[in-house]
Image (cartoon, rainbow, N blue to C red; front, side, top):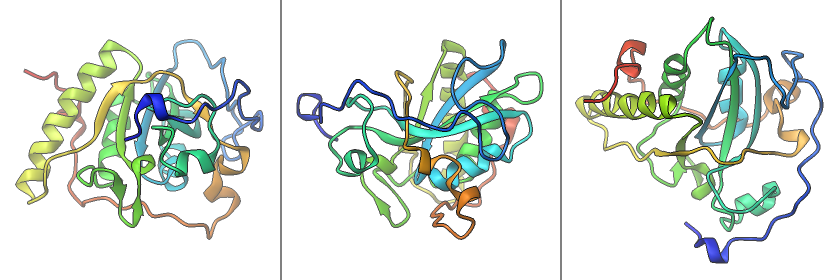
Length: 210
């Protein structure tokens, strides 16, 4: 991981993105509907990761971007250089009356391998690390319990310890517009996403630690 003092300086101007989700037709940027929650996760290449969530029940909108690092409003090339500290991330806005944060985390865990450190399959680098960027103390508690519980499931199946970062969300920087809903715009595009085959029961995800 790059030292914050050596991270790229970035820029003040945010990336311009389309006003609406290419698939769902909902707003891509805030303000979102009152009472809706935000989840931010990193699970490897964000193209395939975003598709997992826009197909999920109860999800209002999704977007791809960069989080967990130091460089404001980075470009994709800058993130891929390893000098921003960011991971490729997906913003998921959902209706808590129709789904739950625990369910979002179930999809997160089951659709990638969270034991690989700074990589996901053939994609190698800090930008591909697994991360849960929580947006509230309640989310933090659910995420910690989820990580502990799913870690037990993985170890029972012969996997190594989970390497997923759990961090406060900080700023979510939108990626360039061509990355948004990429696999809907490019159905034959690259998707390196792959899970472990180990299931994560939702009840397990939502049980507080301790």
